[in-house]
Each structure stands twice: as structure tokens, then as C-alpha cells.
Amino acid sequence: MTAVRVQQAASLRIDEIYRYSRSRWGSAQADACITGLFEAFNRIAAGGVLPRVRSRPSWA
Image 1: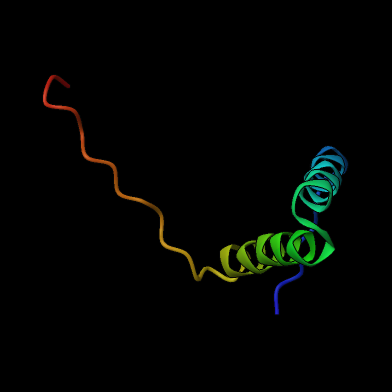
Image 2 (image 1 turned 180 degrees about the horizontal axis):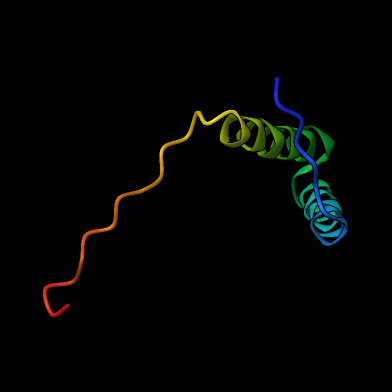
């Protein structure tokens, strides 16, 4: 498994997301939200997420 490092600024925002989610929807939902974020981070780090393909605008 690839280790994911979170920068300090991102860590502070993740903490804010957790606190907001907990106050709005409760601890269980906040836990699920943060767990889902880190699962996504791990998939990205492992190369398991394909980038979106953007089509060029017709005027470009």
C-alpha cells in the first residue's frame, strides 16, 4: 500500500471538514466522510484513478 502524506494546510482543512460534518450530520457521517477521503487518496496514490478526459471546446 502506498503511504499518503497530507500537507499541514490540507490537514487543517480536513479537520474543518470533519468538525463541520460532525456538527451537521453527526459523528458517524463525519467519520464516513473522512474515511472516504482517505480511501480516495489511497486509490489516487496507487494509480487506481484515471484522469478525466476533457474535450476541447469547438472554438479552440
